[in-house]
Every structure is written in structure tokens, then in C-alpha cells.
Amino acid sequence: MGRYPDDIYVNAMRIVKQAYKITRNWQGDPCMPRSFSWDRLNCSYFDNIPRITSLNLSSSKLTGQINTSFSDLISLESLDLSNNQLTGEIPEVLGKLPNLKLLNLSGNNLSGPIPKALTEKNGNPLILRFDLLIATHLIHSSAVALSA
Image (cartoon, rainbow, N blue to C red; front, side):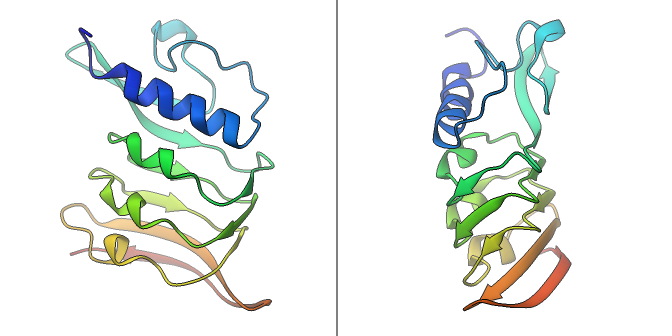
């Protein structure tokens, strides 16, 4: 394999691309070669090992539930899924992202509680932006800083 388990993050991004029918010209490795890294994401290259550190899919016409494959992007510090048409609950597995500092879910139709894995996140504080729907009534639009 050689590098950071690139097959994990490459596969995760392929699953996300397929699940949401993203039509961007995303091909091959999201981070390599550096001069051709995919748009709307940033990579870091610690010891020349590429890692996706931020992903911005805001206003990308995403529909359905939040795909659990985002949790395979273990170096993510920022995930912006705002202003889409995402529904359902926030997946508990997003709390397993150890470096996540910003999660923007505002402008969607999400419902249910904030998962404990996010509210009890150890280590770095997390800024969570969201709109909370109960039934069909918007009751809260907020940015919350969560820390352990």
C-alpha cells in the first residue's frame, strides 16, 4: 500500500460521489497528485502521506440521509454539508472522527437528537451548526461549540 491507507479514503469518496450522484469531475485519488487534487476538499501531506482534512459539499443538491462513509475520512477537521436536502438523523459514526472541529449541517431537513458520540467527543472541541426539525416545525437554528 505504501501511503496512508489511501484505498480507504479514495473508496469513501467514491461511495459519497455515487450515493449523492455528484457530477463533479472527481477521478482517481482525491489528494494526488497535489496539483490535481479534487475541488471542494483540502488535503494535508504529513510525511508525504495525503489525508483529506476538509470537505465542503455545501449547496451541492445532496438528498437523502447523511452517508456513513464520511466516517472513513478519519483526518477530517471540517465537514460542510450545509444547504442541501439531507434528511433523517445525524449518524452516530460522525463522532468517531477524532480530528473533527467543524460540522456544518445547517440548511437541511435533519431530525432527531444530536448523537452522544458528538456531544461527548473527547479531545478537540467541535463546532456544530445545524437546524433541528421536530415533525415539520423548525425549532432551533444554532451553532454550538461542544467540548469534553
